[in-house]
Image 1 (cartoon, one colour):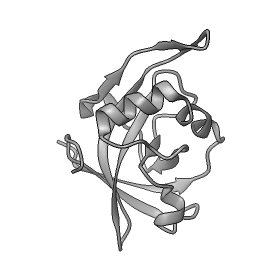
Image 2 (cartoon, helix red, strand yellow; image 1 turned 60 degrees about the vertical axis):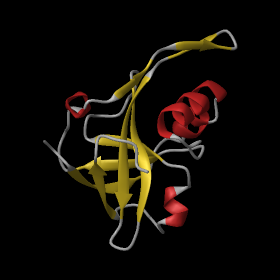
Image 3 (spheres, rainbow, N blue to C red; image 1 turned 30 degrees about the vertical axis):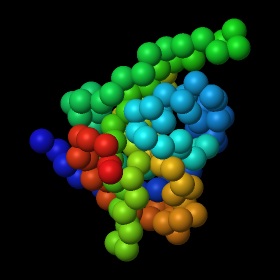
Image 4 (cartoon, one colour; image 1 turned 30 degrees about the horizontal axis):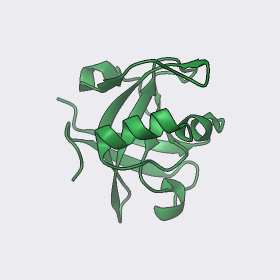
Length: 134
């Protein structure tokens, strides 16, 4: 089974920040991952397309919040690593997304760009371990 992914940091549209700020998403991620994620996502462009469903994601159902419907997401706990540091996090794969299958979104309890000193085109390694990153 696939255990590592490599990709380059790319800019997103800023939509992850909005969704990550919504209380229902925050609560669901905290219950599943054990931490409240930073309000934003890190976008990673992989060298190839990937079917994230093969990685046995944890699924969050659709829900309504303040009279609006929000779509569920699939979550895959991971570690995000540079050559110097590793941080626990998760791949989030929204049911409704405009990203191609070679762009993934990462969440973590910290702002990854700041704490891992990341800029666009930096290469990171994502370690898939199938369990919470304790």
